[in-house]
Length: 328
Length: 218
Image (cartoon, rainbow over all chains, first blue to last red; front, side, top):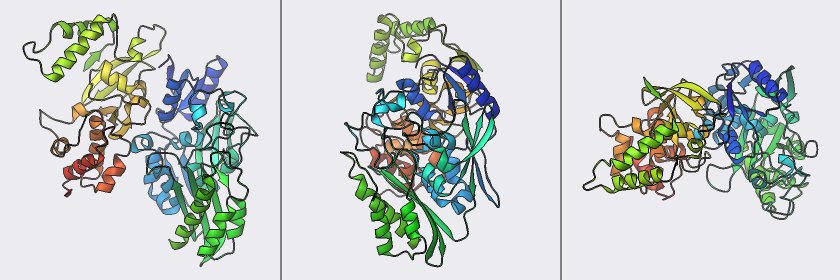
């Protein structure tokens, strides 16, 4: 690995100050929660960081706290902790399921919620050093290339897909993200944290240069809310979602009163299916309703040459997700 | 308390000593033969270190940090370059080569060690992040020459084929058995999902883990 220096941060405020200082000195800092993905990118040269801000030495923002109004998740909580947390499993089952579906035990034991939320795209062009939009270039090589795993929604000018399994769940639960930067803290709704390439072709979220995701607040779901995360992969385990469906449904008897359906793996951001949500509201879940929701989910999809398989896959995944929730 | 230093010259000297003083010159075992041959090659190709990190370790500008790390119960006070991975520290610094480097990118699991009891990919942890941590490697399993029940089950079930992934498999399975002493086959598969076997000997590995927990694998 090329020479770099490690800075042990002792607090969130100290970490963002250290990052800002490094920037001012003309260096390139990178926050490291678990570090598994960061080190790959540093070794490969796709991440130019030369100062690692180590967050393992930070004592705050690690805990998951359940209160009456909701659950507060520290950005530095590991995915293992998230999937094992009793309150998360009981009240936000989709979130525990999504966390459990990420990577491997070795990754989940160190990977943080904040890191999962801010991971860079896994597009093979970006990861293999192509000078694309995501690495500061002015081209998306997938457009006329190997685009089998690229976006069917919201693409252009870059067609990456957002890889996080837990991000769509947090959008579906309408979580609030607390960001910490050198100028203080701010809050943004989960859905507004992620940005489309047409807004910012380089970055996937609103974080500033020395800013980090410190904490996530998930408001308590209304009574009679059920949720699930349904993940389709191109093999049985240990990979990203071809498509993931985060579904949160509030019920009154058998009727849906409110629904959120948000997809992973099909768009550059967690992709909310508003038309499907509106369709479900007020309806009883039947096989026909679930099927119609599935068909509706791809009505405005814009596939590329080699990713058309994602259309029937998305329809089926949305349909099954709704049926499984109704059955459960 | 050991105080290790990573002086390239000292490493080269160690390799040369190995080269000229093989343990059993009369009838070397296959393993000794391979080790001796490897050491000779290393010593004769000017300065050849085991990994890119070590090869670059003459770079005076590379930032270094002093850390204290417990490995298999032994405290090590070491000066590491900030860019060294934990796998490189274990293998090249401390000499515990049971931990393997396969993909070197947190995909294959050959480098799995326990950090404060939890399996992690040591190829994707910086050594400086292990400051004050307790690391357990495959060398820390057997005690006084006695294999752990898991290791014995690996032997009995022919779990290793080429063996390169075995130490990582053992560490993941050790953590599983500590949390869940009698895992089912499905639980073993879930715990070992991050350890790839290039020989694809997964069935025997899962059988070994289940057997180590006292489960019936017939």
